[in-house]
Image 1 (tube, helix red, strand yellow):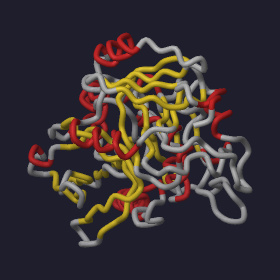
Image 2: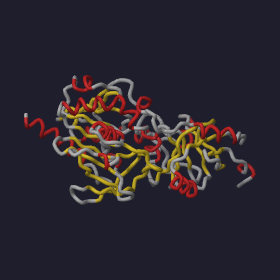
Image 3: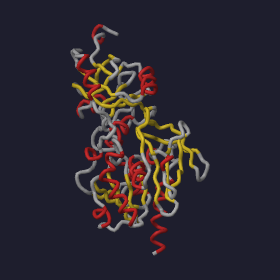
Image 4: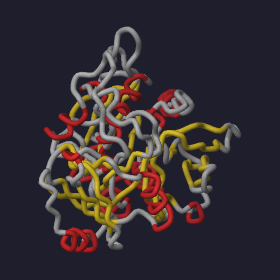
Length: 386
């Protein structure tokens, strides 16, 4: 290091007392959260703006972060939701024709605290071995840190278990969505001839999920996480979508599960992703469990039991459905080839299904798009039955 950069300007304190020093960027101040790692080689902007990362600081295992800058088209929601960022190398000046702003300025304006110059391999091994730790991250340009206080704050943080974060990231009121998936050379276009009326429950929905629904022929109305079954059914939908989101599914399920059960009683096609998958499972009588360090990345192999095919998927979850708790009328449709954890379910007697992974995130790049088409087909079949 040069003389100007020899003094650390950021500090990451783990609850076990381990301290990592580095160079701060983004906003100054302190934040406390759960620390996870993400193995994706691309999509840092989509990751930071994914509402499922609420309450978490993301360690990026890929060292080149910031090299393509940021642009409004790649936001999954209006502002970053992840509490902070940990990287090996300091973000570079962007070199991409789509870049509208550099990552450091973007993070600073939006109040995200970040640290660079960290041995992310060592940190990732620690996360894998001990589970996702509670941490405090501080950025001070003068390098003044109260280490004991930071460790105490990390230890005092209650964690994600029992925490309902969907209320914090959901929309304030209902809205319509008609923007479809990006395609060359037009970019984003609008759905002008929808054939299926879908209500999407926003537990922290990513924009690209809504685009995929629109591209599958859906007229999408988005409702807040706290919407009741009466709110949903009053719109007379052909199907109901349960979105991704952050926090403990059991906590969000306290108000979401009764709604989902009433929707199921109406015999509507239902499709869930991520948190929506977990809460659908809870509504059907299964249980969810906290994982050691979760699944976060764009390179996760998942086996489809119906076809025997392996899909390369994107994942972001720290809780999972306990497949041993599934009732008799619900079967496991997908499993992770990393650890055998549940990645999909469906009912045997109704057009109701869900997956843990993110089919809209294009990691395969199109391995899982069929799930949106399956949802559309189930709505078409129900309408044809009259």
